[in-house]
View 1 (cartoon, rainbow, N blue to C red):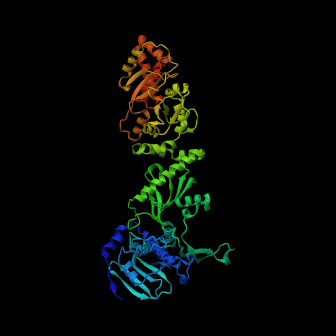
View 2 (cartoon, rainbow, N blue to C red):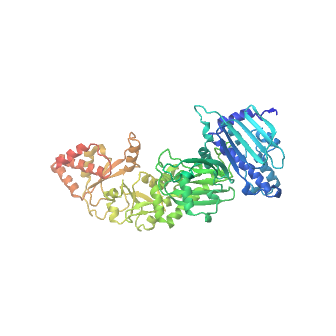
Length: 629
């Protein structure tokens, strides 16, 4: 038995494999199991035409054995096996792939290429085991060969190959684990709960059973009726993986309860999905997807800790738990799984190289989610409103983000509370029932519906019977500004100085009010940009409107997130010239100008309060009111 050296600069490559390519050491088990599945795939394919083999699909399996005394972990398969040349070519040359060669040969023959789906393509996964192993032994016997071989290596120094005894076809990979260090605990890979969890995480959908002898505990039969029953350990062969993923089963054969249970277990969710989306696509890119729209907002959804993205599988093997590229930001609430073989993976299978297939899948899924939400809105309004309560804000953020790039796709999914319907309505529903003479889609902003109901700026609109959309979230006004218009109808805030309508309640002829307006402006100074005679007030004496591009809601929002920003909307004070308080102030200009100035200050402070803006000096305002009393 001669010591042999790795080929193709393998020492450097092996060092790279162990220290750089793989992010997590636990990945090694996924890679070894994937290789075992590949080996079984090959023999399973041969068994279709070789009756002498005497094996059916039910005979194939992968076994895992943990030996704590000898610190070894053994992964065995009854697949095609390897001969001496295979060991030389596949294990002696890093990055040479027997699976890739097998696929090439099938392709050249053009025979039943679709009947076999090989996972491994790069031939490097085996070496990931050296992240946890101080020595690896491979015992293997190939289909069609009478001789078995043993391959052994302790790492980059090389390997040895010799003949050995093995009764059955297949391969045993025996990993002798490294000794524990202060930083690393390699014993964990000998614990049955840890091995079971890793198989469930990465290899749950390998198509062959992954078996392991599990130690369990039970009450001794003879002590069952005792006050102090005694326990005994026993062993049981257990299948660790599910094998057939739920998304591969025909939709008609899966009950919604099964989807709900899968969603709960896979994503550790406490709620039931409000919508389950199952899709299968074949063509330029082939994939299956199982998506879930949650019914409630995760506790960390609007925090930086929340991770968006779908679980991505390649032929049933988990590639990444959160593939962010598969869902756009405005649909980040969607949970689910995508399984495809049509991906360009890097050699570690941990990260994706960006390619057109991934982009195509993402675009298809975005359209699918949009269609499903639209269908729910149209046919299941109650559940859609429940969904919107949980994630409507996210859709609005989607309208605002990326300079409004997604507004056309999202605008018909938005809901706003209606002043006339007293419920959530769509923009389409609003426009469809607009009055013939109505020029704009009107909206008003406030902390809640009750606060908006009390706004004096909405009085004129209400008197005309015009519907008003209530904006109660900080993103609402930004959303409507991003949309600008809907079905050729522009949006107009109830606080705008020009609502496009006339006030029928205003006196037909008004005397010149310029002196009063000038007096109030001079009294208030820089506190207001302008003082005008209101065209919208009916019963209230005063209100504030914003001039320029910044509204009061924007001012409040920016000052809440950036207190030092100094963001401030230009204030326009509107006076209701027919109101008794304004008339009293006007008369006092001639008889008691100091008192008239106090009236002007009080009316301005009241306008601030109505607009939900803070008083600069609440104590001073209180003294001012008391002095008038």
